[in-house]
Image 1 (spheres, rainbow, N blue to C red):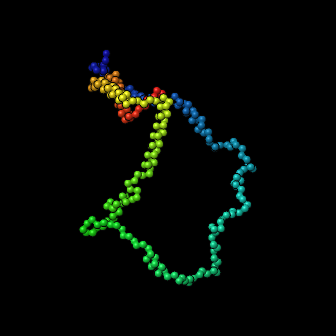
Image 2 (cartoon, rainbow, N blue to C red):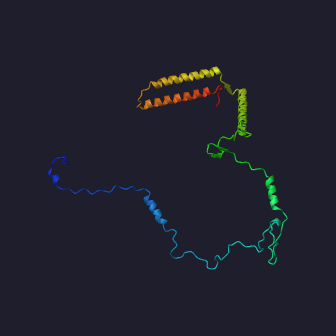
Image 3 (cartoon, helix red, strand yellow):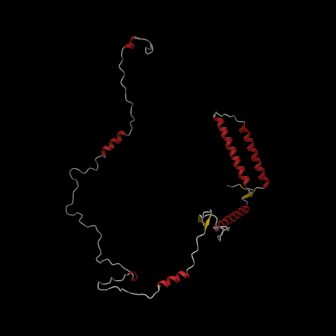
Length: 256
């Protein structure tokens, strides 16, 4: 008889709640092995205590014992004759002072200014009645680029690229002709190519009609698989049609 939900005199007696047990913690199976290994190597490198190694008191490393031996000859630096500087003048040698020149600096500077070309004024333009002027070179009004010598000409790198493309096409044509002579590949005729594209489009129409007949809500696993299979099939047909329509010349081979 269940007395939990029925009235009973025993329910009036206070009961001591059972002790709560802590949830069991995870303990690895390698816990004991790791603990023992840590104890073994914990004090493996300690050095305190009685010295157990015999120390040599006579044959020990002395100062500069392993240093590289120095040369007896002093250091000499080889210097070319042109790199040598002049000797320092002695204390009793006085410098030459009061030297004069007969050069007429005023006349020389005047001749230099006369012979130099005149400074051209910087081109500017005014766009307001008040006379506000601006730089003409960077304004866009001056014919800056169209006046250059290479304006309107094809850059050299484009001509180089065109030559590379022509060379690649020529090598490819030679390879195709060689395969033709060996009978390894065959060219598809335009009629056969047109029929192939038409047949692929008919196949796509058939798959699309079946795809349109599917229910709007597909909640079963086989139905989802069928829908995905039709989508992949239509995508493959679209890619094949696109590839064949882009190229007017198609080659086929039996070997891959």
